[in-house]
Length: 233
Image (spheres, one colour):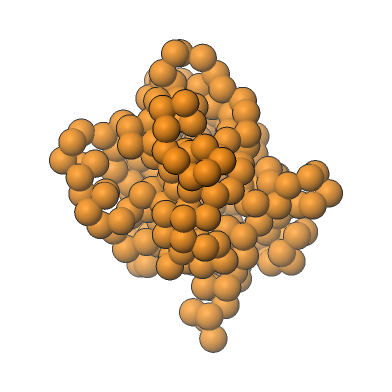
């Protein structure tokens, strides 16, 4: 599986992601500068967290116009795998690869914490190494992670099972108290209709190495690897 990690001015989680795909999973990984246009050699494109272009104007609003993101849109349109984490999720919504928007957290505070997540589906390239309804714990760190969409979009997301992760308590209940940012329907991560594009606010790359004490995020990357290797074979 060949992995590309986009790098914008202001990205700060790109090396963390590359550490997981290259060093933990042993997959060839290249950093893709935002001005690059050729992603033809890649199976998986990852848009990492950080503050692309300083988050000026609006989170992800400038990054969507970069040559690398235009190439990422084409990659997704061909059925290629695209993962956006935190600011990467914001970029994917701004680029139109995923519906809805990420707005200021309810309470207007930056939140840095570890949260419970319920895995809604285990039949996606991103989740086949989890169990459906499994509760995992991942770190979050964001000021604009409140997922918002109008009622029609929310209904479509639910109808087509595009909600992949929801904030929940330790028993899997999607309560108001377990929602760290006020996201509608406790949404923490969604996919597109085809399932090849995933955006999520929590950081799986920060929970993918036993050396740092938590591996709940590793299964997401192992899921992608399993799917990609199967597709290539």
